[in-house]
Amino acid sequence: MIAIGNDHTGYELKMEIIKYLEEKGIEYKDFGCGKIDSSDYPVYAKAVCKAIQNKECDKGILICGTGIGISIAANKMKGIRAALCHDCFSAEATRLHNDANVLALGARVVGPGLAVKIVDTFLNTEFSGQERHIRRIKMLEEE
Image (tube, rainbow, N blue to C red):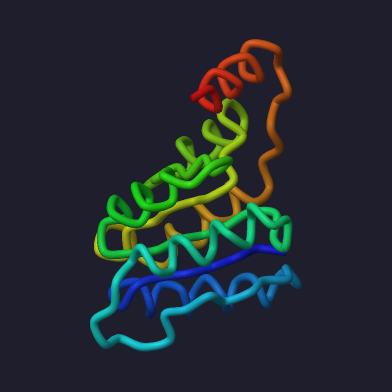
């Protein structure tokens, strides 16, 4: 199950991504925001990440204007590895090497066509499981 959330600037792009998820038969849970009125991205980042922490969802997709703020908010949460990606190469690499569990997108940076390709790449790339990457992820988890 994919958790998806956004602030007001990410609403329209989220709806395009939801259309893709539905076409592919991918289950998702929408954590909002469900409107284009001003909203605060940390609220939605926390809701999506809590669903991942609680194992209610496997991965998450977060969208704000640039993707920066919402990815910063997500990465403050234990066990979350959010990657801001604006291209397919980065989406693939962060899954292969970082086992990222949250994809952040900037609605003012990427259009819907590219965003859907990035989401597809992120969701369909498995973690490599290589020892060097496992070691580095463990280092990230150290306090």
